[in-house]
Image (cartoon, rainbow, N blue to C red):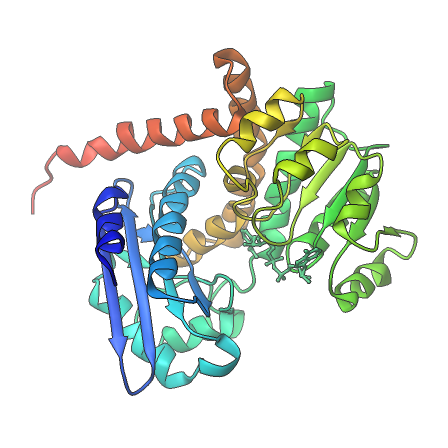
Length: 360
Ligand SMILES: NC(=O)c1ccc[n+]([C@@H]2O[C@H](COP(=O)([O-])OP(=O)(O)OC[C@H]3O[C@@H](n4cnc5c(N)ncnc54)[C@H](O)[C@@H]3O)[C@@H](O)[C@H]2O)c1
């Protein structure tokens, strides 16, 4: 690691960054804790073949900060953290490596709680749970809440309804044309919700099997060959539900949709895109606001609460989205700036309460 990577740790406004190595299992991981102002730092573990240590560190720092904002906006008593395991999950993932990683998570004594992310699944969390109690997103068979795609989709649907309410004065999606790019664990459940609400839907996915699965339930759904063709259609709402960076300059320039609201993380390719969307009159529901259903499910699992509670909290994403859009209008800023402000306000006001000392 060079000097600039070390500088990054201290300049990125994080509390703690832990490097974890176990040579026999091949484990190389970084756990980044951005904030514990609201509670233990919760965020998933990304298993990814980073080209070098600096890019892995960069990702861990960026993602853990985003988790602080997501958890705060969702009203959770959780701070933000994220971990990355450097390696190819298809080749390098073993019981030994996951359990070694679990021991490092345990060593943090609950300051960090892990979950799934790109390259890790509920079955991996079951293995990690053999070494640490600070883990969520375990499978139902192992006492966890299972896959969170369904609840995440419910939150995105609520964000979409609130955006429609703000833009058109009605929360109903009846007669609205929605384009969904990526119909995996989140996108396919989102399609169920919006079709049931009366929207006309066009989907696209790189994976034909994912498209076929959706067409089994909705045989009359339109399918575009790729995202570019999907975007060329006359859409009212665009829902990016695949990977990050979906909203870049060329996409914003051709977008016909009045609303963007989808499940994908990190949709803005760079920070100025929020303003570019607002300048074109496109209402963007911030991704980390509307896709919080997954993290709500994790928090619910850790607390041992009934599933109904997580569902209720996810449905309230409707109200939070409306509040963010109203605040954005009142302050004359893009919704993403308004969402950041709300999250920061809660981190400061509620986080301050730890200054009231409790008896030991
Ligand atoms: N699963 C959750 O609970 C959750 C929670 C919060 C955020 N997210 C985010 O939502 C997004 C989707 O997550 P998921 O769990 O559904 O993942 P997934 O892997 O199950 O589904 C993603 C789908 O997108 C498709 N895809 C990838 N690149 C594409 C492209 N260029 N064009 C069209 N389709 C493409 C894939 O083939 C796949 O079917 C990710 O960005 C993820 O970080 C997921």
